Image 1: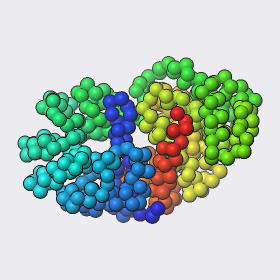
Image 2: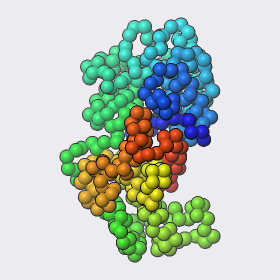
Image 3: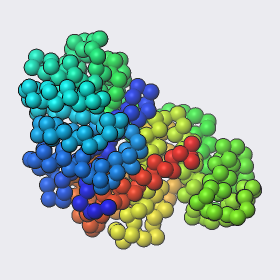
Image 4: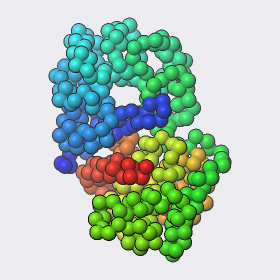
Length: 407
């Protein structure tokens, strides 16, 4: 994969909390992280790099990709290089709905493509496009609560569905649900629903205690064996994992103790953390687990590039635990007090002023397409920014693959 490809993805959820699609976030390169003065280049590059650089299905895990199109790229029909099942065409709010644009959208619609109107603000001139739209996106940052309610009332019974974008809080998410939005996009899912102290469900508490045992410096294999044996789900996951084709054992491993010994301490800590974390995330949107896995893999992968070789496991834990507050609806500091995590991991997650914390901020910025902050974090860490897309791509590929065996 060439080093010049810069694409991040942001999930779009349906009303059940499942990922419906990913919007692909574009960056043209190292020199213009904020100057999107050439929108045509941005649109065409996303199409080209997604299809021929990363491989679109690898980048989105087979979900639909929302791609922004300028007028020029829309009229060029380049987007038809992508199969209609894999893409939703976003017509940017800056595109004037003249005859050529309307005809291009009609042609896409007739050929089975999903037509999306981006950052929509009502004006009578957009009526021809509204008649062709499958999805209309309403920006929650630039619109007021009253404006959103008025638009939802106007569009009652329309043939298109509404997408609430830039939804930053749970309050806004609840508002969007009540207004009848079908899809949701933003960072609300990565924050706890309740800030004040809240009882943790028993099954989550058990897995938090398991994580505590796992992170003791003097790991006790006998104790670990007893804990895993008492949990049918963990026992099953461990034996399924150790007997997977990845290991290629000649003989099937049938005992928990044998599995633990064959794994070894470092792989055991990594596997057990993933298994416990996936169980904690069972009643949350699946994308929350995927987000934590991407961050964990990215933080681990970049260790050698930032002179933190030997700290891979700590960096992995930092990335993985970065969403634990959202999983148990409790403040981060309280949760980490209960699982006795290492000082280095705790400082990165709570204090946020360490090199390891900067690694976490780097992957969060990349996931959110905050390119200026990506550049800032790379400079602080002394890492070559051209290597970041490859670390990110490997992380999302691994996360998508590993989340299936964890289920």
